Amino acid sequence: MLWLYLVLCVTSALGKNIHSSGVAPIVKLNDGYAMPRLGLGTWLGILTTGSPEEVQQAVEAAIDAGYRHIDTAHIYNTEKQVGKGLKKKIEEGVVKREDMFITTKLWSDAHPRDAVIPTLNESLNHLGMDYVDLYLIHWPVATFFELGVVPIPKSVKKNRVEENIDIFDFELTPEERNLLKSYDANYRTIDPKFWKKSPYYPFNN
Image 1 (cartoon, one colour):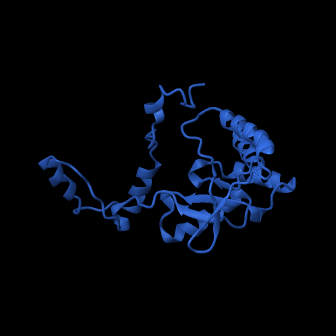
Image 2 (image 1 turned 60 degrees about the vertical axis):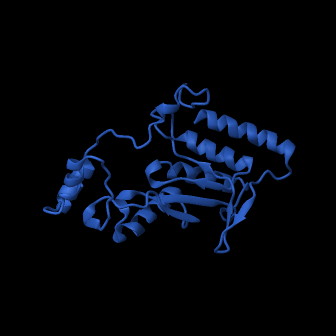
Image 3 (image 1 turned 180 degrees about the vertical axis):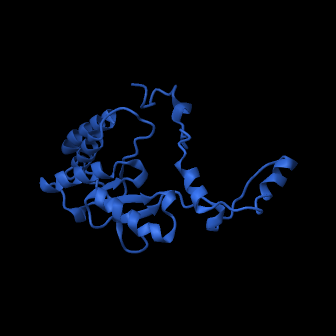
């Protein structure tokens, strides 16, 4: 995150000389609301070093640079830092809450109807806010067949095709599903090592 913080600081300094306001332009949505055309993402990816304060510093620098859209998510574990960064800039008089567009997201383990509001309230508590401007379903697919998902397995092998449909003679209990969710498989859904040789790969340092 240090590289992002430095880039934002430089952008802020240059912006003061180049543009009178430096605030990102907005786009009108079809419901009449407006959203800034540029936002700051706060997912740390596969980083295992660094401190949470780096996210807060990046948010503060982004607001100084003219960003008015900050994107976070429950699974990112950065909501608290986003909230702290915004709170500081509000206290400094740089922005008001209504000047900002804050996005966060519902993670895949909270898709059941009775879990949505409690999870949203948890995110709001992390952010220190009473509302967000946009609340997205992070991955708009459910996890288990019992929840009504229509899976689309694919294979070109006859035996695999037959195996994939042979799933209707049992059901997992809620306890079994919770047990499966509790396992730490140390699996990452996105592996950026593909770009490791790129001169712009940000995780070499």
